[in-house]
Length: 227
Image (tube, rainbow, N blue to C red; front, side, top):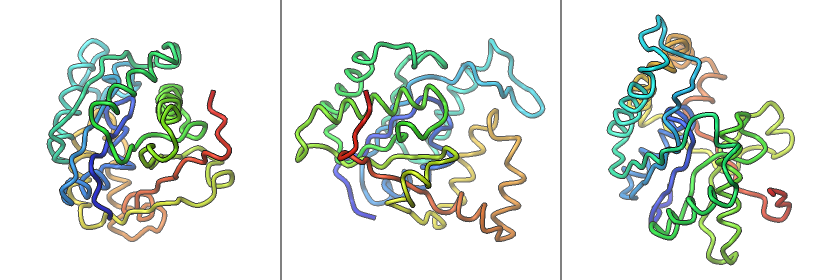
Protein backbone atom coordinates (compact mmCIF):
# COMPACT_ATOMS: atom_id res chain seq x y z
CA UNK A 1 0.00 0.00 0.00
CA UNK A 2 1.33 3.41 -1.00
CA UNK A 3 2.18 5.77 1.84
CA UNK A 4 -0.05 8.84 1.70
CA UNK A 5 0.58 12.34 3.00
CA UNK A 6 -2.83 12.45 4.71
CA UNK A 7 -5.99 10.36 4.44
CA UNK A 8 -9.41 11.93 5.03
CA UNK A 9 -12.27 9.49 5.66
CA UNK A 10 -15.76 10.98 5.34
CA UNK A 11 -18.85 8.94 6.20
CA UNK A 12 -22.27 9.90 7.57
CA UNK A 13 -22.77 7.25 10.28
CA UNK A 14 -20.83 5.46 13.00
CA UNK A 15 -20.06 1.96 11.66
CA UNK A 16 -20.00 3.06 8.00
CA UNK A 17 -16.25 2.63 8.23
CA UNK A 18 -16.30 -0.72 9.99
CA UNK A 19 -17.41 -3.13 7.27
CA UNK A 20 -15.68 -1.88 4.14
CA UNK A 21 -12.74 0.31 5.10
CA UNK A 22 -11.56 -0.30 8.69
CA UNK A 23 -8.86 -2.69 7.56
CA UNK A 24 -7.64 -0.18 4.99
CA UNK A 25 -7.63 2.58 7.61
CA UNK A 26 -5.48 0.44 9.91
CA UNK A 27 -3.07 -0.42 7.11
CA UNK A 28 -2.64 3.28 6.30
CA UNK A 29 -2.00 4.05 9.96
CA UNK A 30 0.46 1.14 10.23
CA UNK A 31 2.19 2.62 7.18
CA UNK A 32 2.74 5.90 9.03
CA UNK A 33 0.00 7.86 7.27
CA UNK A 34 -2.12 10.20 9.43
CA UNK A 35 -5.85 9.50 9.11
CA UNK A 36 -8.68 11.89 9.95
CA UNK A 37 -12.17 10.44 10.24
CA UNK A 38 -15.02 12.93 9.81
CA UNK A 39 -18.27 11.24 10.88
CA UNK A 40 -21.18 13.50 10.02
CA UNK A 41 -23.88 12.14 12.38
CA UNK A 42 -24.21 9.88 15.42
CA UNK A 43 -26.60 7.53 13.63
CA UNK A 44 -29.23 8.32 16.21
CA UNK A 45 -32.12 7.21 13.99
CA UNK A 46 -30.79 3.70 13.37
CA UNK A 47 -33.39 0.93 13.49
CA UNK A 48 -31.13 -1.45 15.44
CA UNK A 49 -31.20 -1.03 19.21
CA UNK A 50 -29.00 -4.04 19.97
CA UNK A 51 -29.69 -7.78 19.78
CA UNK A 52 -31.22 -8.38 22.27
CA UNK A 53 -32.16 -4.68 22.61
CA UNK A 54 -30.09 -2.74 25.14
CA UNK A 55 -30.67 0.79 23.84
CA UNK A 56 -33.67 3.07 23.62
CA UNK A 57 -34.35 5.81 21.10
CA UNK A 58 -33.25 8.30 23.79
CA UNK A 59 -30.06 6.49 24.80
CA UNK A 60 -28.93 5.42 21.33
CA UNK A 61 -27.02 8.64 20.40
CA UNK A 62 -24.76 8.36 23.48
CA UNK A 63 -24.26 4.65 22.89
CA UNK A 64 -23.33 5.11 19.24
CA UNK A 65 -20.99 7.98 20.11
CA UNK A 66 -19.18 5.73 22.59
CA UNK A 67 -19.08 2.92 20.00
CA UNK A 68 -17.57 5.28 17.43
CA UNK A 69 -14.92 6.45 19.89
CA UNK A 70 -14.06 2.86 20.80
CA UNK A 71 -13.85 1.77 17.15
CA UNK A 72 -11.61 4.74 16.33
CA UNK A 73 -9.36 3.89 19.26
CA UNK A 74 -9.01 0.29 18.05
CA UNK A 75 -8.14 1.48 14.53
CA UNK A 76 -5.56 3.89 15.92
CA UNK A 77 -7.28 7.03 14.66
CA UNK A 78 -5.99 10.06 16.56
CA UNK A 79 -8.14 12.65 14.77
CA UNK A 80 -11.84 11.80 15.00
CA UNK A 81 -14.19 14.62 14.02
CA UNK A 82 -17.90 14.41 14.92
CA UNK A 83 -19.47 16.94 12.61
CA UNK A 84 -22.80 17.37 14.39
CA UNK A 85 -25.32 16.70 11.64
CA UNK A 86 -28.53 14.80 12.37
CA UNK A 87 -29.04 11.26 11.12
CA UNK A 88 -31.42 10.81 8.16
CA UNK A 89 -31.45 14.54 7.37
CA UNK A 90 -28.33 14.98 5.22
CA UNK A 91 -30.34 14.74 2.01
CA UNK A 92 -32.21 17.86 3.12
CA UNK A 93 -29.10 19.90 3.93
CA UNK A 94 -28.11 22.69 1.57
CA UNK A 95 -25.80 21.18 -1.04
CA UNK A 96 -23.37 24.08 -1.04
CA UNK A 97 -23.15 24.13 2.75
CA UNK A 98 -22.31 20.43 2.84
CA UNK A 99 -19.67 20.95 0.17
CA UNK A 100 -18.27 23.91 2.10
CA UNK A 101 -17.95 21.72 5.20
CA UNK A 102 -15.93 19.20 3.20
CA UNK A 103 -13.88 21.98 1.62
CA UNK A 104 -12.88 23.36 5.04
CA UNK A 105 -11.64 19.91 6.03
CA UNK A 106 -9.68 19.61 2.79
CA UNK A 107 -8.28 23.11 3.15
CA UNK A 108 -7.05 22.34 6.66
CA UNK A 109 -5.75 18.81 6.09
CA UNK A 110 -4.65 18.86 2.43
CA UNK A 111 -5.37 15.14 2.05
CA UNK A 112 -3.68 13.18 -0.68
CA UNK A 113 -6.48 10.59 -0.47
CA UNK A 114 -10.17 10.82 0.45
CA UNK A 115 -12.19 7.70 1.30
CA UNK A 116 -15.98 7.96 1.11
CA UNK A 117 -18.98 6.56 -0.78
CA UNK A 118 -19.47 6.50 -4.54
CA UNK A 119 -22.43 8.71 -5.56
CA UNK A 120 -25.29 6.79 -7.08
CA UNK A 121 -24.15 3.43 -5.72
CA UNK A 122 -24.34 3.69 -1.93
CA UNK A 123 -28.06 3.04 -1.31
CA UNK A 124 -28.85 5.19 1.77
CA UNK A 125 -29.90 8.86 1.28
CA UNK A 126 -27.32 10.02 3.88
CA UNK A 127 -24.63 8.03 2.07
CA UNK A 128 -25.60 9.60 -1.23
CA UNK A 129 -25.65 13.16 0.17
CA UNK A 130 -22.18 12.64 1.65
CA UNK A 131 -20.86 11.20 -1.60
CA UNK A 132 -22.23 14.10 -3.65
CA UNK A 133 -20.70 16.63 -1.25
CA UNK A 134 -17.28 15.03 -1.65
CA UNK A 135 -17.49 15.07 -5.44
CA UNK A 136 -18.73 18.66 -5.58
CA UNK A 137 -15.88 19.75 -3.35
CA UNK A 138 -13.09 17.94 -5.15
CA UNK A 139 -14.49 19.17 -8.46
CA UNK A 140 -13.71 22.75 -7.37
CA UNK A 141 -9.99 22.04 -7.58
CA UNK A 142 -7.90 21.96 -10.76
CA UNK A 143 -7.46 18.41 -11.98
CA UNK A 144 -3.78 18.32 -11.06
CA UNK A 145 -4.55 19.45 -7.50
CA UNK A 146 -7.31 16.95 -6.71
CA UNK A 147 -6.72 14.26 -4.07
CA UNK A 148 -7.23 10.66 -5.03
CA UNK A 149 -10.69 9.29 -4.33
CA UNK A 150 -11.17 5.72 -3.13
CA UNK A 151 -14.93 5.24 -3.01
CA UNK A 152 -17.10 2.46 -1.60
CA UNK A 153 -19.96 1.13 -3.77
CA UNK A 154 -22.41 -1.60 -2.78
CA UNK A 155 -25.69 -1.17 -4.62
CA UNK A 156 -27.12 -4.15 -6.50
CA UNK A 157 -25.91 -2.88 -9.87
CA UNK A 158 -22.62 -1.21 -9.00
CA UNK A 159 -20.29 -3.76 -10.64
CA UNK A 160 -22.47 -3.98 -13.74
CA UNK A 161 -22.19 -0.22 -14.24
CA UNK A 162 -18.83 0.65 -12.68
CA UNK A 163 -16.96 -2.55 -13.45
CA UNK A 164 -14.75 -4.42 -11.01
CA UNK A 165 -13.11 -2.47 -8.20
CA UNK A 166 -10.14 -0.33 -9.18
CA UNK A 167 -8.38 -0.83 -5.85
CA UNK A 168 -8.51 -3.94 -3.65
CA UNK A 169 -6.72 -4.16 -0.31
CA UNK A 170 -6.07 -7.54 1.29
CA UNK A 171 -6.57 -6.79 4.98
CA UNK A 172 -6.12 -10.34 6.31
CA UNK A 173 -3.10 -9.17 8.35
CA UNK A 174 -5.35 -6.86 10.39
CA UNK A 175 -8.46 -9.07 10.28
CA UNK A 176 -8.57 -9.76 14.02
CA UNK A 177 -8.54 -6.03 14.77
CA UNK A 178 -11.22 -5.48 12.13
CA UNK A 179 -13.39 -7.94 14.07
CA UNK A 180 -12.77 -5.83 17.18
CA UNK A 181 -13.87 -2.71 15.26
CA UNK A 182 -17.06 -4.44 14.19
CA UNK A 183 -17.70 -5.59 17.75
CA UNK A 184 -17.19 -2.04 18.98
CA UNK A 185 -20.31 -1.09 16.99
CA UNK A 186 -22.24 -3.91 18.65
CA UNK A 187 -25.60 -2.10 18.71
CA UNK A 188 -25.56 -2.31 14.90
CA UNK A 189 -23.53 -5.47 14.25
CA UNK A 190 -24.74 -8.04 16.80
CA UNK A 191 -27.26 -9.50 14.35
CA UNK A 192 -24.61 -10.57 11.86
CA UNK A 193 -21.42 -11.23 13.84
CA UNK A 194 -21.88 -14.99 14.24
CA UNK A 195 -22.72 -15.51 10.57
CA UNK A 196 -19.80 -13.33 9.46
CA UNK A 197 -17.23 -15.04 11.69
CA UNK A 198 -18.46 -18.49 10.71
CA UNK A 199 -18.34 -17.53 7.05
CA UNK A 200 -14.76 -16.26 7.21
CA UNK A 201 -13.35 -19.03 9.43
CA UNK A 202 -14.98 -21.73 7.29
CA UNK A 203 -13.48 -20.22 4.14
CA UNK A 204 -16.79 -19.29 2.58
CA UNK A 205 -15.66 -17.43 -0.56
CA UNK A 206 -18.43 -14.81 -0.41
CA UNK A 207 -17.64 -13.84 3.18
CA UNK A 208 -13.88 -14.07 2.60
CA UNK A 209 -14.05 -11.73 -0.38
CA UNK A 210 -16.41 -9.36 1.40
CA UNK A 211 -14.54 -9.10 4.70
CA UNK A 212 -10.86 -9.84 3.99
CA UNK A 213 -10.63 -7.74 0.84
CA UNK A 214 -11.77 -4.14 0.83
CA UNK A 215 -12.91 -2.80 -2.53
CA UNK A 216 -12.75 0.75 -3.82
CA UNK A 217 -13.60 2.55 -7.03
CA UNK A 218 -11.91 5.67 -8.34
CA UNK A 219 -14.24 8.38 -9.57
CA UNK A 220 -14.99 8.59 -13.29
CA UNK A 221 -14.36 12.30 -13.89
CA UNK A 222 -14.86 11.88 -17.63
CA UNK A 223 -18.52 11.01 -17.04
CA UNK A 224 -19.08 13.23 -14.02
CA UNK A 225 -22.83 13.73 -13.62
CA UNK A 226 -23.15 14.69 -9.95
CA UNK A 227 -25.33 17.79 -9.67
